[in-house]
Length: 149
Image (cartoon, rainbow, N blue to C red; front, top):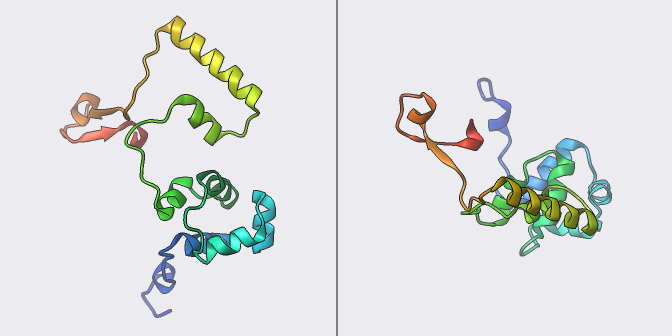
């Protein structure tokens, strides 16, 4: 590393999903076997993933890897080539992706949420909500996404 060069510039950025996973795994101090055990996968799966030999890794497996490595699953999805959603997911698939739960718990949540929707007249959105910046007291007319507030 030369003088004036920061640490990030000295190390090439991972350009592939496999390179990124390997970089994060090593930074976290895991061996391939240790990561595989924590995530509930075979070490060969992790090895193939890191060598970019997986055509389309499962989003569920990528989410588990992201959780263990403390990285955003969105990053792994993007590197795997999954397209960003143009619409919001339905509540149950979202909850199943976010939380590990039994089928019984998922059905109970679905029933409870359906009742709340009826009783409180909750309307489902199909697209992420955006508002104009001037609606929020900002001077700019540019659109602002809720998740950035």
